Length: 142
Image (tube, rainbow, N blue to C red):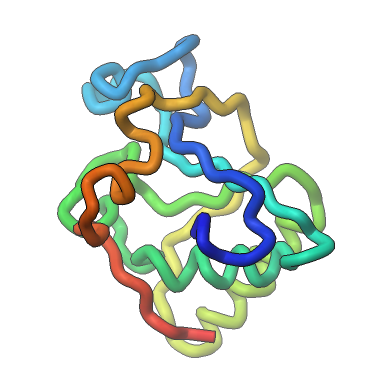
């Protein structure tokens, strides 16, 4: 996602939940209620929220009910945490369009709660490891 023109920054972290400053280990235990997430900041003069969200749907499995690829569990479920009504409406329209094409969209939309940055070793993970993502690949839908 960081390679899309107009993306200002991406940051891996945890969102939602009921504890302050969760760690990866806390979230993996499944008792904090947090999701693993990527916070994406973009320049809407360069890229639209629609284009960002379309890419989101192309780079993860929004039909998987129990996680993402081999990563199973509550914290990996497909969600969009929107920060304004325009993002919510655009995401809802894209989901409706996908469902009309018979996709079984499992992604839920929720207002964005507090975001907690993940540990440094999680940031830019694939770039650091020099590899391809193991839990998702891009599939052209739009």
